[in-house]
Length: 306
Ligand SMILES: [Zn+2]
Ligand SMILES: [Zn+2]
View (tube, rainbow, N blue to C red):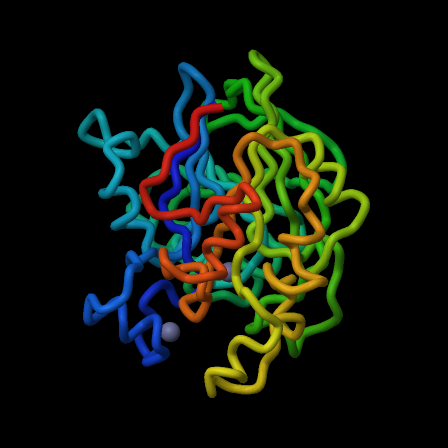
């Protein structure tokens, strides 16, 4: 299995357009040891097949251009076989609307996510210009199915959606109560090698099902949004705490770094890192603590071969 990180930042990216926090100012000015990052998305493939995107960020066009593996090989062509969504937040879905140039798309999502994106969304009509422009394939929680592209041919990658504590996208918060289908993590198994990826970019907490998916994996990507619960209020950036936004912080006694210390995965990588997070600074004590525990911090362009 080959994995390519297209974007490693949380919503807003790094730096974020309206943010003057010390990290964002420092990376703009070149005065801190940190690298800009696009919003979270990765591409995955097994040998001999095209790429499957996990999430499509608002920066999808640049992300495709940044990676030759995703460039067309014919006058009208894309190596992108399908897109898999982990929740309905705009930083994970808005890129779909940018892929509107009359190209057939396959999107894997839970039924809740599909409805949340398509119902009452006038802009979705841009993806309904011809019959079959978008084929939605339903992910049901806890069952494994083989990923396939537009032609329906199997990819050799088997996927399972795992419910993860989360929340509704902000634009749907007034529309109802949450559901386990609103936020998922993914287990992806390569049939030929048996190698497993666990992809959990947004996790409000750990459950036995999440723990099992992480325990079984050879490579783990996990929610690295915030180092601490009060990261935003402490920097004068509003009142929301990490748990209000359904993100388990990395640091501290109740954080993921402590909770996930026993994982056997040879690659453990924090992704979906918010621009305020001290992990972005290559020389910060928090970064050193995470690295000493065997974790890496995802950067754009990072590749993993499993
Ligand atoms: Zn996000
Ligand atoms: Zn910032």
